[in-house]
Image (cartoon, rainbow, N blue to C red):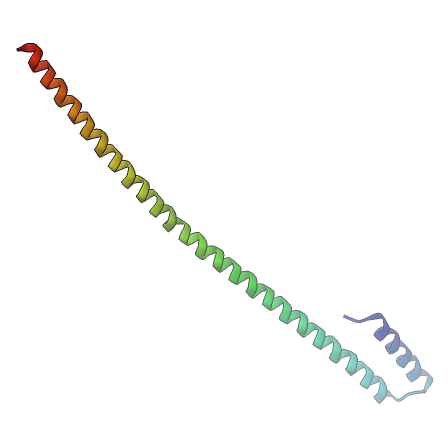
Length: 112
């Protein structure tokens, strides 16, 4: 909060007041100026902290949104996979049905 030069100046002003070189009003003025600078620095720091927290919250919200989209994308991918596998199974079923038909025809011709 304090910087080294500012503290040294305040110490000198206090010493000057004790020695009677300055009036109490001048010391109060210096203390108020120092306090004013500290309050401004604290305000800037708090604004920085608030902006950082808000930024972190926004990042988390974006991550949540992208994470909530992931299940939708995963569901869509699974739906496509299932559709492709169903088509493949239909083709296999038709081929098996053709083979069964050919076997039946072959068995009938052997029996006759």
